[in-house]
Each structure stands twice: as structure tokens, then as C-alpha cells.
Image 1 (cartoon, rainbow, N blue to C red):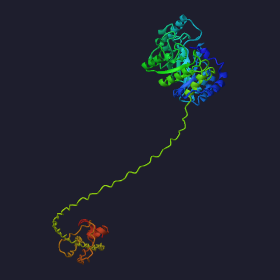
Image 2: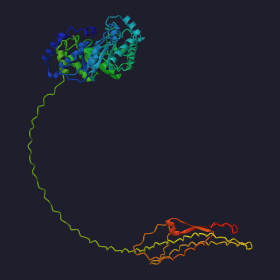
Image 3: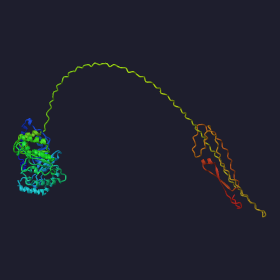
Image 4: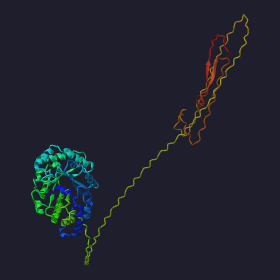
Length: 522
């Protein structure tokens, strides 16, 4: 597996681009060798910093407009500051990722400083032990906060990649068990940051290398994706051998399936076997068949196909496989009219059906009896005409108050005795009671109407002429009280309506001064 320092070198990038564009357009391949395109998320490592971001649209144009959905870069592993994400180029990648929802940002993260300094195994074992004890947790917590702050909390973190090899200081061979404990501490520290949605990709080299990569697998709870870096190199001369070898492509697919994980190919490309279009075609078909979450080709020399002019045939195979295929023009198929042979119509003889008359059975008519409806006469009840009696208004006599004449007493003689003055008897005036007239009952005689009380409302007079009322008998006038009487009478007014009913009345008061009082004012 090539060292990452070669990935960060871009000396040949500017010179090979024009040559690749020219040679890629000039070369042709037989139609039967053209691979089928794929819609799986793909990308390419073009550069670790802003130039890598800027080259993505040009790679898309070279591929006939195919969308590049994966952006892939590496953090430097020389110092802990770089592993903590304290590098400016992360801002450019974060801006590219946020520009579209379907894009994916893949970030390779070293697990140790001095990651490419060829640290011996005994020192690697000491570093692994320190990591398993939690001495480096703070570095990865800072990285997680940095990614969340940049707006890329769903970054795919390829942590400690190619750990089964001999190249990097974060290799697991010197102490596999503590290495797995160290991986768990890193994942736990990064997942503790609020807002994170990271996916952790376990990506060994294809093949056995220094140690079988399954011995370094840290567990399903801290792994989201099982990846593999697969370059065209030994072990395995042909692509079929790369598939079937121990810890090869087939074992990788089977292992991920057994653990319920998605697969990926973060790094793949040409290497020891030079310009090998067969490897490129077979690798792309393998990817399309097994549907990884994503794949990215390492596109710089000697691995690349677009930025490396020394691999023109592989570049053409790559371009033909991933360029969207335009639908071929549809040639209309001529339609040959089919002659219509008329079918002779054989008339079917019509056999008349004899008509059998149906005898009509007369239906007897049953008369319906008419039941007469009896007419019940409605009795006419005569409405009696009740005459309104006229109550006579008696003339109440006004009693005359006598004006007594003062007597001139004669001087008696001594021999004569004083005469006894008479006691005048003032007669009480008789108040006449009004006699109710007896109206003549109209015909018919029955019923005899009762005389209504004064409080009742008078009935509505009938249409016929009212009977002639009998004139009331004149009431005798009350006798005037005698002159110089002791009885005083004052007329009483009860109002017009009540006076008509009870007549005119008077209130009389009799004053008795005594017969021998010798006083009489009148």
C-alpha cells in the first residue's frame, strides 16, 4: 500500500490534466468491453486541500457530466494539532459538502502522531497502550467539535486505515487487543460530542499483509461500515485471485454481511501492474454488483486515471464505464400491412316456429257493493240574545237642612211655671232602594238568561232589535226632616258608576243634647 505522503504530493497534477483529456478522447474500446454504468456514490481523491475541491467539477465534465457525490481527503498525522482538525482546508471541504444534501464527506483520521515516521513495533505497542488507557481521548473530542462546528456532523471517519499493514504508526499488529480497546475509546470520545452523526469506517488493506484484518475488528457497536483499500498489486496477480485470496474481496463482502454492515472502497486504483484496463473494468463491475455505500479512486500517479497520463487505457476504461449513456435514437420499425381476407358469410336458414294460440280465460267481474254513508245532521243550537238591562239611576233626595227660628222668650210671671220644651223627633229619611226592572224575556223562552253582575263584561248585543225596557217606577222622595230637628243628613257621592248602581244616598247624624240641657243652638 503506498504511503500517504505520496498522496499529498501534487507535482504531476498540472502537467497531466491536458494530456489525459486528449488521450482519453482519442482512444476507443470495443462495444463488447464497455462496462455498465453505476449510480453508486462515487468520488476521487484529487488533492487533500482546496485544489482537490476545485478539481471536482472538471472530473465531472470529463466523465460526461456524471455527478461526483463523494469528497475525500486526509488529515495530516505528523502532529496532534493536525489530528485535532486544526487545519484550514477543512473549511473548503465542509462548504462543498453543505452545498448539496446528497453529498458525502469522507475523512481519513490517523490514530497516532508521527504516523508515517517508521516507528518500531515496541514503541507502537507503548503508544497503543497509552491510547487504550484514554490518554489521547481529548484530541479526538476536539476533532469532533471542530467537524460539528463546520456543519459536517455526518462525516464518514475512516479511522486508523490499513491497520493490518506495516506502514503506519496506528497499525494494530504489535498489540491487537489493546488496539481494539483504543479504537473503542476514540469512537466513544467522538460520539460524546452533542450534535454528531458520524459514521466510522473500518478499512483494512486487501489480503493478509502483516496480520489478518479480522483480528483487528473492534466490534459491531463501534463500527458502522466495513471498508477495504484494494490496489492492483500482490498478493494476487489477476483480479480473480484478488477476489478469492484469504482476506480478499470475497471475504470482505461475506464478513460485512455476517455483521450486518455496509461496505465501502475508500481507496482503489492501479499500482504494481501498470496500465491495466482489465483491472479497472473488473473492479467497477465488482462495485456495481455488491453496491457499496461509496467508492473513491486514488487519482494521482501511479494510481490514477484522470490526472495521470501514464495510464491512458485504464483512463478510457474508467471513463467509458462511468460516463452516463445517452439513449440511442429509436429507429421506427416499418409496419407491413396484413391483407384482410374476407370471410364468406353463410346464411343460416331460419326455421319458422309455429305459433300456438293461448286460450284466453275470462276473468269474472265481481261487483263491489256500494255502502251508503249515513248523513248525520248537525243540530243548530240557537244563540240566546241576552238583553243588556238598564239600571235606573234613582234621584237621591237632597234633605233640606232646617233653619230654626230663634224664639223670643216671653218673660214669665212669677206665678207661671216654665213650659217644657218639646223634643223634636227628626224622622230618618228613607233611602229608596232601586228596583231592578224585569225585562221581558225574548223568544225563544229557553234558556232564561241570568242578569249579569256589574263586574261582568256586557255581552255583545244581538243583531235583532232589543226589547223595549219596562220603565222604572218612580221612587218616593224622602221626607224632609222637621225643622229644628236633631238629625243632620249629608249627601254621599260614590262616583258615577256606583251611584248608578246603588242610587244616591245620604249620611245622617243625630245629636242629642238632652231634654233638660236648656241649650239648643238653633
